[in-house]
Image (cartoon, rainbow, N blue to C red; front, side, top):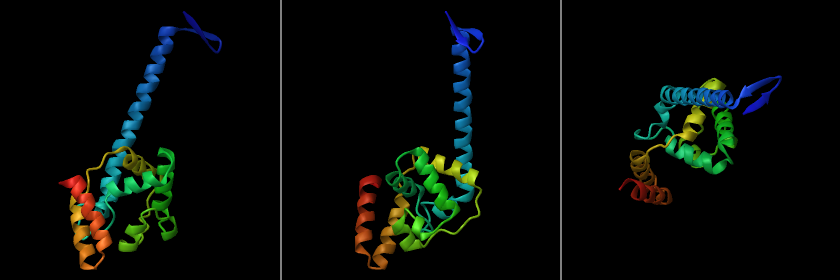
Length: 163
């Protein structure tokens, strides 16, 4: 069987082989971008967004992912919104309202847009472990400031996902 590709006739086997090669190349490129996004996240973000920090300096990536997925319609919207906020952090652009109230707006880290997009894609596509240590620290801090609503919410999350 022959199919027409412009002025050339290509056998079905060659067309299928070409499609497979293109798919493998695209898949390899996507995997490279995710690996690069993971490393960029580790190098540039985890100093503040580490779920083990007590007291927390920034929301854990588990929470960032959850909030941005709730606030966006799809992967591209997620990447775009997280990128815009990271490049130009401000209270009016914040999706993590509670984190901004408790910790302030993140500083402008002077990041490169292409790198931030890779980080945002990695955050979207990765499964993060529940931030059990973060919730414990947050419960302690909320109780210390008398914020029982926040303490109860974090205790509920801790009980549901960490016990």
